[in-house]
Length: 381
Image 1 (cartoon, one colour):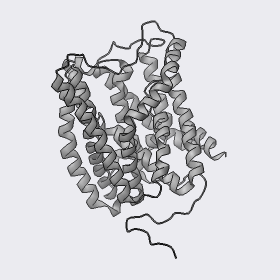
Image 2: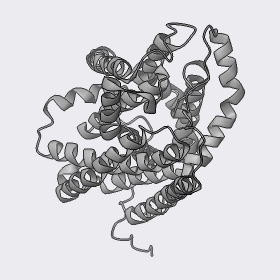
Image 3: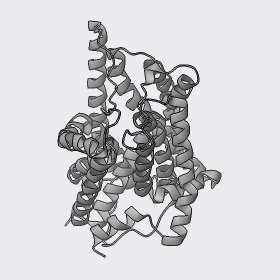
Image 4: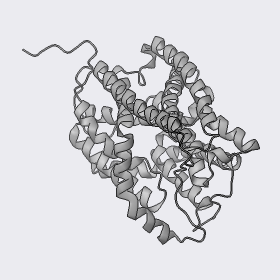
């Protein structure tokens, strides 16, 4: 006799090898929106401006970015990554799971070395292997693990920030910007990234690992419960997420915006947990709102983001290519010359232009170029 499954466990799913062909609108819309929001926030890193030095219109744009985007869309993206990775493991088995994430590690490493130091694909791919240990967890188990990891990471960050504040450290704030010099050639930039790549990747996995795994587990729990594929079964949950997520997340976004006007070291430390904690709350609020619109069949113009979400990897890499071509010293050489308003404006235009291009590409080819390449490498066909 076999033991009965716990009440919140997902029923066993037969392993069917091959790429997933059926798509639901909500995950693609969320992914497309997240990709645009991440680009708006990453504009600061591409352009090389410091948040706390912005004035006038630049400060206003920075405040809006902090309140509504900073930490919000990267949280949605990480949860979607966990949702997809856990679903892949459940449906296709560990062999395909391992092969896909090794391919993603290769793609992300090349992106980081050859294009932009801020790549997240390689970091997500490394941390995804930890999801193998969660394959048998129930929804409740995943949520519990996520809460423990998230609270631990946020708590350590707040303790570090308040300790620095109590000590009255007079050190200036760290920027996290790449070390680029006027006139640097492309080989020089790549050489510098290559020298620090492994340390940055491992350091990022150690520092951010608990938090990202917490988000991956939230996404995996959503997958087990069918929240994204069957949102019509969860209207009460979606209403709760939209209400409480925004009630908590938006005020924390205001706190983040205030911290990002200050150039002291302690404010920089405190901004990290405030950004991610408030970002997760707002992210859940956005998921709840868009989920309710999906249930009521009222996505309307938001449907255009689905095409961008279906070719997210190709769009993400192309964003890096275009933004570094504008700002980096071996090309447009505008690094450190633009403020928040122009930088975020450029990012917004680029992200919106990608949407009709993505729709046209999908009509013509059915999948994005990098998505096709990854699929060929994973499934060998």
